[in-house]
Image (cartoon, rainbow, N blue to C red; front, side):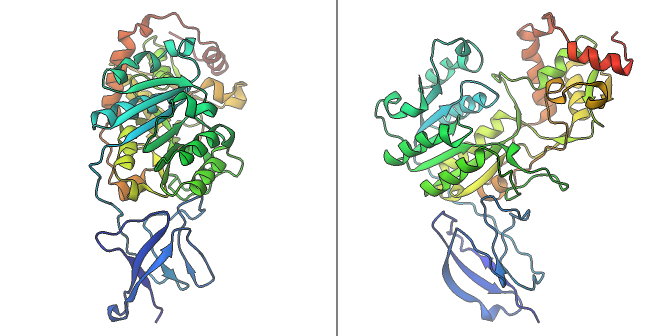
Length: 415
């Protein structure tokens, strides 16, 4: 009979980036349990055994973690890796991008940390007097400073000067998309004694798959610029974690998501969706993303050495998003589908989401950090529509030139 050993952790054990203390239980004969030993977290594979690496593995079964012999005998035990949450208050530096959808992550993360009693400095790339700072979420930074946080501006390459020699326990890079941008921050953080380094990567680095959703450990694109950044951080820091978000919504976001649908619905225009409309995607409220990040700060031992899909735990179809947005407005919606090539448009310019299944699940955050989503997309969209109307966007003059080209090709009239 084939022998199978299943990894077991004692109740006070935590995975770290240095070593993992484990015993292995013979499920066929428990009396043959192996004594505890230290297993390097760099993980290994040989002809007789395999262990799943958390970083850039092509094996989809990243969770649960199971040690098997070569016969792959079928005892499939799993374990959660939840450490005790630290009550220690941290000094956290957030290096925040000055553009794109990710800027709102740093904004919400700062407010959540401050609400939990941590000290926070937000360093935004660029100049405080620039036009970009007149947009959300930057024009709401008083919400950070009024809660006791600090805000500074500057070049990440000069980060030490920008923060005035101040020291921090934790640094989150929510700006860089390549090693050139992030390595100065990593190197400075290491040299200044920062204990934990967090990085906002992207779920866009996953290779396309015939088995959605994407889970931690799925293969990534070799040419994705975030990949060498993730690898560099893992090499330099003992305590690190990477977060891969997708699409997000939330007050203060300056990149259209739900607004794209509202713009058309309130003007009684058809919603042109490429393909079948059944493509799955993930749209997360930034509150959920910030709560996941905060758990990593407050439980660094558990978070260390892990990659987390920083996403909601529910998928939505592209058609479903249009219908939920219409529901939030209290209006009806007309959806039309089209083939971008047939109508001669670039789907990336015509539609705010990828024209394919693009859906990840937050399995690692649930199992390792004990994270739970606290938001609900239909209700979130109602809140977002109220703000949409409040700022007067529903009355704003707009042109829909690409839409008109699509609708003309489909011979669909606009009421």
